Amino acid sequence: MALIIEKLFGFVMVLTRISAFFMVLPVFGWQSIPVRIKVAMTVLLAVFFSMITPISVDAGQISSAEAVLLIANEATYGLALGLVAALIFAVVKFSGGIIEREMGLTMAEILDPLTGESEQILCILLEMIFIMLILSVNGHHLFLLIISRSYESFPAGSIPTIPVLTEGIIVAGSTMLIYGLKLALPILAAFILLMVILAVLARMVPEMNILFVSLPLRVGLGLLMMAIFMPFIGSFVGEFANLMGKLLPL
Image 1: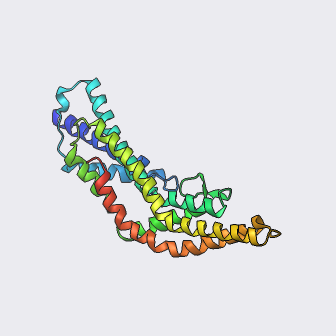
Image 2: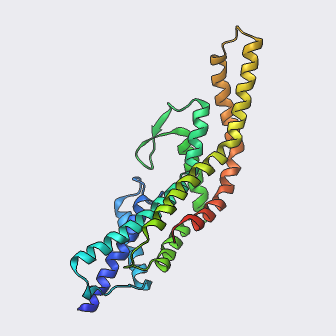
Image 3: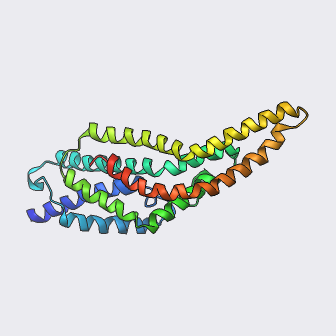
């Protein structure tokens, strides 16, 4: 009986960490995926990892309060891992928001079928392209590797180091801003050049309506630069895996 309780408690701890991780993780946490598939996938992964993951506590010698605390620790660690992965994943979407703002399309929003929220058109397009590139190179296996490595660093039942988790989230947030600006930097330079040209035209031809002329030019330049921008998204796929390995608190 004690062995059954220990195995069941270990399964619950593993299930808690995996559920918290996938709850905030992109792709798997979207509303477009049916709840039944999410639950089935989470339970199957929990069964697998509970069979190969050592448990560092004895379920028969802990109180109910300690059991709740251990489960809360697992949820905290899973949420921290998922949040770091989500911040790194949002780099392409963040850069798309910068580009769309320069194009003057910030008011153009549609319903994102993946998340069920209103999002900017260009951000959704870049995110879908990035997702297809990630899945085409089996990037979803990276998420399973993250879970496996997390149990090597913090076995089920161990207390996660809060400063390490906090530092990982802060560094991931700053990395998202830096890499998002890096990806959008060539397009920002093109728009700065366009603004300089329009300023010169405004001085040379005062009767020209610069506001009327600039809008189609900004949209056209943005679409042209986006076509040039696509290979950079493909190169970021490999950088994404490196960032996940460096920034995750493992």
